[in-house]
Image (cartoon, rainbow, N blue to C red):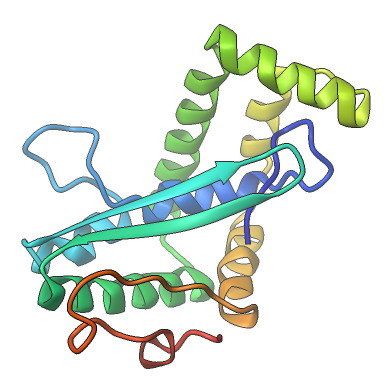
Amino acid sequence: PGSSTPTGASYKPEIAVLAALLGGQSAIKWSSGFSLLSKASSKFQGATVATKSAIYSDAGLLSVSIKGSAKDVKGAAQEVVNALKQVAEGVSKEDFTKAKAAAKFKELEFGQNIDAGIELTGAGLVQGNKAYQIYEVARGIDAVTEEQLKEAAKAIFENKATVSSVGDLYVLPYAEELGLKV
């Protein structure tokens, strides 16, 4: 699952909130961060986890990347799946509010970049006759509900997942071992 650009037909602001909630890397030096994956993967010091919502004009991709030793990557990968299951069941109001704020900040920070604004406006005008409006992005993220976030997380388990591994394949988990559908 993923989300297109805000001017695209398949824009889903809940994907940006899900990416912020999952996170992985702290924005604050010397802190593990508030995100679910930064907390969960702290048990695996040899692994680095990062979540990204890549947006394109007509589609998107939610990805979680894990780097580190094979043993730590295996443990962190299971924590990623556990965190997604936790989101599908529901998260605390505080975590949800923090994730919305982080997603909104990232989207607004990205949108103030002149190059990004021109690219998004151009793609929107060419494909859907709709200019990029930064306030619409903020309003869309503000409108995300906990139910939408749960549905976005559930969709990950209902649809086929792609898992790519580079390294010690005798140790690294396969998608089926993690409980993902392939």
